[in-house]
Amino acid sequence: MNDQAPINKIIPFSNVDGPGNRTSIFFQGCTYACKFCHNPETIRLCIHCGACVPGCPTGALRRENGLVRWNATDCVQCDACLKACPHMSSPRIRWMRAEEVFHEIRRAFPYIEGITVSGGDCTLYAAFLKELFPLVRAFGKTCLIDGNGAYDFTRDPELLEVCDGVMLDIKAADPEWSRFLIGNDGACALRSLDGLLRAGKLAEVRTVIFPGRDHENEETVRTVAQQIQNACPYKIIRYRPFGVRTEFQALLGEDTTEFEEAERYASLARSLGATKAFVV
Ligand code: SF4
Ligand code: SF4
Image 1 (spheres, rainbow, N blue to C red):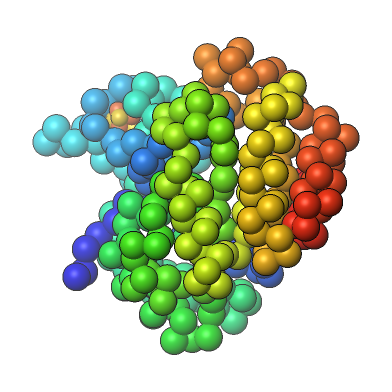
Image 2: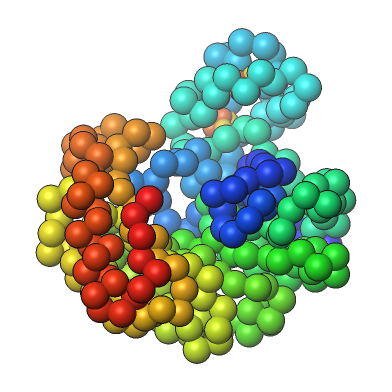
């Protein structure tokens, strides 16, 4: 194949992207544009409009033959370009082949348990993952997918075969609430949940709890808990407005979900058999 994929960033050591110390690889581009996304700059590919170039304080961005070029050496990671971009994108993307990513992350192998691929939506690049994972697994490292629920894993047994597990977002069980949050009815994510359970590849499920949305929160937590039981950890995540686009903070709430409110849902999940439910 040798296809390239747009890589937003690689974090050599992370202890929040799955079990143990892991290398995290973030892909650019997403199938959704969730209202509560905390990394909206990963949603779209750059269209080279140039709006971010003048505000770069170090000249790390320049226009060349109609394209915006990024010079990593001159970049001071100030994020001014991300704030200036009107297209939910970033100019700081590297198009890389699977072998190139592998060679870059290999240096971390003595210190990590495995890798986690994320985004954006890394499953947009399933063919790329099917090249990368065997290279990594040959060194005894695990490969986890951080999935946003858009990919129907049940239709890609080859990908399941080469990955060690999927950490799956179940954002909403109620179709209307799902349409509001992410723009579709959420059926695909629930299908994937079922398929991953059957395949023994469900590594973790995550649900964000929104303040004051009792009915919607409860329906999602009940649906997930009754299905996963104690098969995997269930992360109950408190909604945090920080980083959410301001136009959506007004719709979703300007307050962080209280720990006690989230804990009520974790407790509900545990009472329904999801014994590994906890709040983060
Ligand atoms: S983060 Fe963006 S604006 Fe800041 S120096 Fe790097 S390229 Fe320029
Ligand atoms: S990152 Fe955004 S603002 Fe900059 S060139 Fe690309 S689309 Fe335009």
